[in-house]
Length: 339
Image (cartoon, rainbow, N blue to C red; front, top):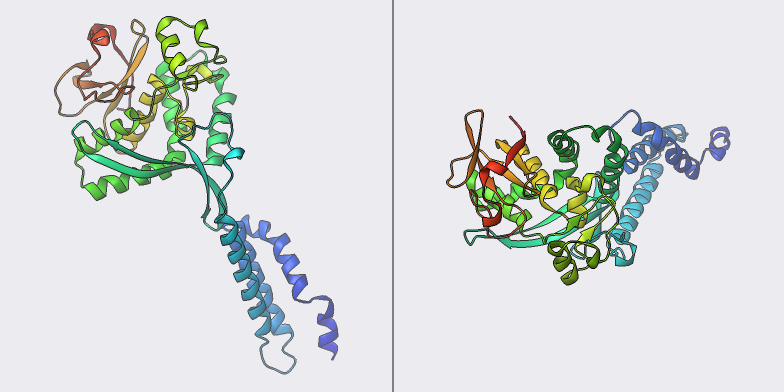
């Protein structure tokens, strides 16, 4: 009877409360999610409570069963909540119509993904499709970090800015890199075919202007810009540092111009071990990709290597080809390589 009285204030509801409070402490020692920290602590305390309550020299399993019921109920509730679609009305203004938000579980935690269901055809008639995602929290955190580091990039070259964006964002592109790997393995793509698949994946995304300042009405711009904006008023995103989106930002809203695209392809192909370059032209006010790989066509030499030019803003451009109004190689300069 003395033991029962002692346990009266240390009942099962009490250990639930202790587990909730202590789970964040457990997280500090183990790289696990908040849910699993709570589960671990709850089961441990239930076991201890069962030992203390074994006044008849038999272990009291009821506390472990209570814990199992609580954990199963929590998982069931989370599954029901995660199955409910997130309202499109909650999207931020710059999220493209091609992006939708979806809840999922990652290591026991509920997160929101920005997803795009894509299907496209490469320049040789091969069709690919996949579900490409980034975490919504990564979308906002990467844009915030980019904005916070803007001052230190003002005195740096384009190449250093591009390298910073590629290096800082590549880890957050992990879900997209995994999907690209799956497509590669499923279709048994060789080195050139995989590069073709990646470049056309980006080429397939409709072009959008990226401005440092606000997007203004079409009549405020020169004719080449005005014509596009008159046909597509949504093909613009403003207030972006240096007029270039970071790769995760681009994958979160699908609004990108030339160097926004070359940087993300540079990041992706660098991750997969390609020898990649970015070429800019002040004369043409344009940016293209360079790839050191067996190919034919227009190339730029650097350190004894041929970097074949690849236009990324328009469909149907194969490696080694450029639009006729951009094709004088003397106006192109390599600003970054990964080797």
